[in-house]
Length: 135
Image (cartoon, rainbow, N blue to C red; front, side):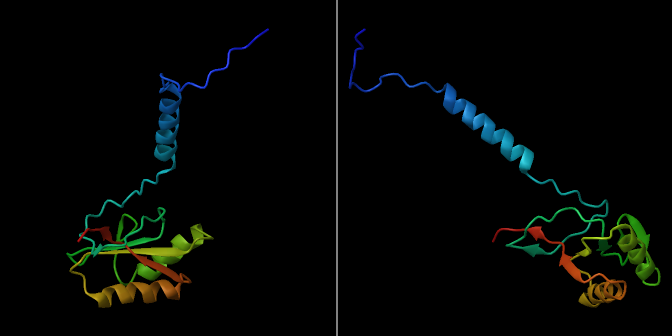
């Protein structure tokens, strides 16, 4: 049996395999992207150019512009903050990182008070919630 060999360039290109690859990449990126769930308290977070999305954390303290404080979605005050944080830490044995979501207008002293209360119950890692901005 004799086979015909040809060195001519292929004049027809099949896009079906390229389409399959693009669809697989699209599905991969949709599945692996992270969707961060924010608490129900609305605050204007300070802006940051290098903002990175964090995995959702059960340890979230929100300081609103009105002076109210929320641990998760529940309202708290300065007297009950340590006990509330202690209960959350007891539920979550590993990954003790506190996310502090403070409004732009909140005094830095209040953020420091939250950090001190958290250190008192054994939380040693903190992150400040920010919004991504472009300059």
